[in-house]
Length: 258
Image (cartoon, rainbow, N blue to C red; front, top):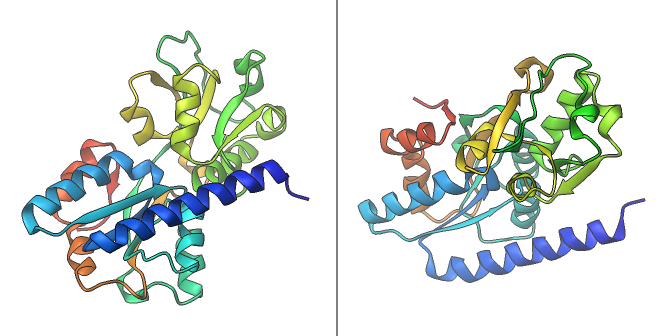
């Protein structure tokens, strides 16, 4: 049985995302729903595109799970960029994206972060003592039941034999940027985020990188929604352009399109 408070928070967040997207869609030529870990890169790329094309781009940034549910409920999104394949598959299987437009845009890595002034030193390896490294504190992680970063984190910790030691020491966040903020503010001594998130936040530092073979590859698929406006095709193509790719690389993503 789910936690009523958690369900309420998710419902409120979903409602806010829908309200924001619906309001923005009336003024925007293009409305993009993107995973929260893309926040900095998409803001820069959208601004560049608007200058070059004159087209207005509205961004709605949240957990991929929340965004996918809103697209399912007729959100007005033109483009969806997920932080994992599962939520794109979810919409694809329901016929809610233009399948032929789908492409794996980016890759990322999963890291363990601590406050920038932390003395924590840890080697991520099978059966590493993550519980001990918390020193009585909690591990910040995006909700592992629905948010891609949390799902990757849980899979990796299970693979490494460290999950059982921390499962009762988690502070779940609605998305990966909130998990990052918990560590940055000192509310959690350690957190699991993407490498790109850690790079964007000077108040944290990377104290370990999770082995890539301990979880599924971290891929960001992008696609047009089935009702996407015609202007959206241009921005989707722009996301794979040399200009956009340079921004993604600067922020730490690996670029998969050519």
